[in-house]
Length: 329
Figure 1 (spheres, rainbow, N blue to C red):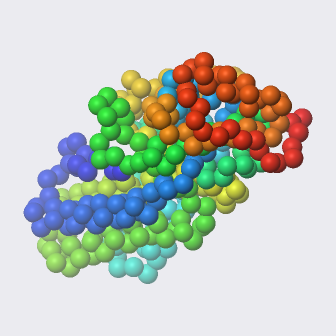
Figure 2 (figure 1 turned 90 degrees about the horizontal axis):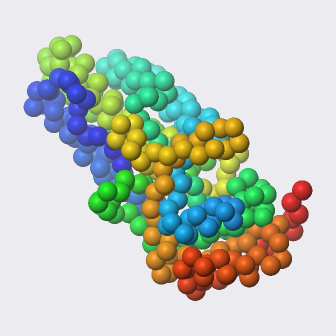
Figure 3 (figure 1 turned 135 degrees about the horizontal axis):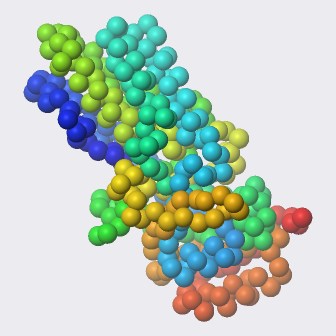
């Protein structure tokens, strides 16, 4: 889940003693992210709300559109996560050892949206644990006239390496509870702060040399930002969206690396960048169900079966209809 585990270009080569401190954090982080990934494994059907044209495109081409995060329904959500992370870091710094405060000051100076918005790109596809949610029918499924396509947990299985030529994607449930979001940020920052303090106490001469100590703080801060903090921010939202029960797939990378995969589409007068990313929805047993929206025309279940046959989908799964009493205006 890390953007990179190597130091930035031109970074100072650290003495072996401090290189070990950096490696200690990397090892801790690998275990931490693996534990979170294991705890977040998808074990139940997830639903994607869309209109009928969107459903046809997904099933015909076997691809989902991952949208540039700046064009999601809540444009402030990454800033929401960053603001919480910065508050957590400030809280940890209060009353801490001066050497820890120096590290956190360095971290905060780097961890600003304007600092990495031009150097990192994030594209998101949204799914939900809720199969029949009124808010999502209204917002994402043509005001209740669309569908929610339910996908098997196997679609979201985590692989060590993506297929050749395919970008890696990461999956994680969105957190809405403020205390939980703070705990996720705090665990990563506190571990890094403890490593800084341990290095300062074990190797005071090295750490007091600004030509050596500062590069360690820089590289460690970048490690903290590149994996846990950015991922935590991308998978946290304001509690007002809790009803969505969202699970996210994310594609992350440097702009130059992602640029060959980025397309654009229009949303009214807005130009929206996206990546058409393959998921195995055309394979047998990957579609668990299609739920027809509460305001869809009466014959939609029948015409959906016709559409499925026309694009070579077997349709060996239920097509049901929302139970919500709702009429689109």
